[in-house]
Length: 64
Image 1 (tube, rainbow, N blue to C red):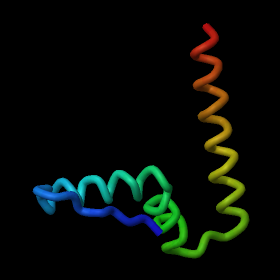
Image 2: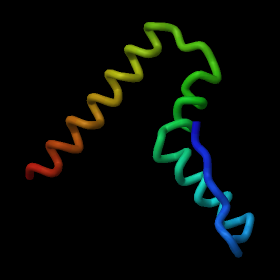
Image 3: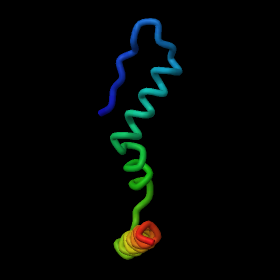
């Protein structure tokens, strides 16, 4: 669980921004998006293969 202690003389917007950053760093938001809908095992495999292809293409471009 992510929590943020509001400092003295700190606006709500700044505290909210710090909270959102800490949530993003811990990966909570991406985890929630991932679990919003059920993903079939075949769809999961397809998504992982596509990510691996993108990663390999990026590596090849960086080597050249």
